[in-house]
Length: 198
Image (tube, rainbow, N blue to C red; front, side, top):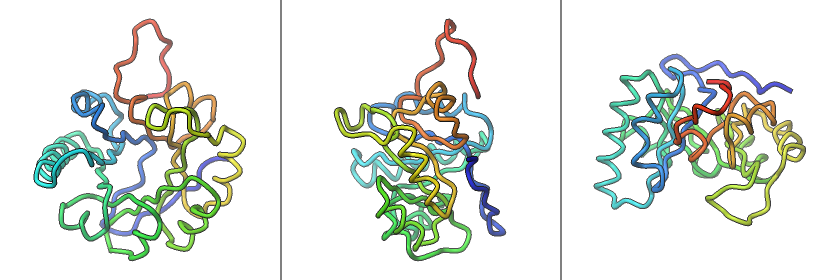
């Protein structure tokens, strides 16, 4: 089943299909990774490893780059913080996104049916559903796998973004257009690998 489509409010960016998620381990690769992404992709900025002032400065630098490249930028934080930091939206647990703010996208994180239901009640714009496949972020943790991922995604009222162990090859295997990755979009493609979706 193809991902549901959404029509953005006036003044709000359309929902990207490809999302680069920032992390301490891919910070030094972000500029090059963002430059490789198709125009209109998105960055989910986390960087919780930084002190508040450093985090704000790093976000501002990456936001400027995203603007030049035509990408959206989402802050892992509250909608109020996203508005103050001039992000295109916020990302977090459904309960933190219940308050709608005009012009901002709201991306909920979910891992099970209870959190999907909470995201539906919050009427978010998209849900990042994870972990689909094994991931370095949570080594050894249970994964959804393709079947359970699709069963849960079909219960979501908003478009679903696949997260967790996602790469271009994994997205083709899952047959899912909207996906996000930390490592899977940070590393340059090997010349020996066949070209996938870009």
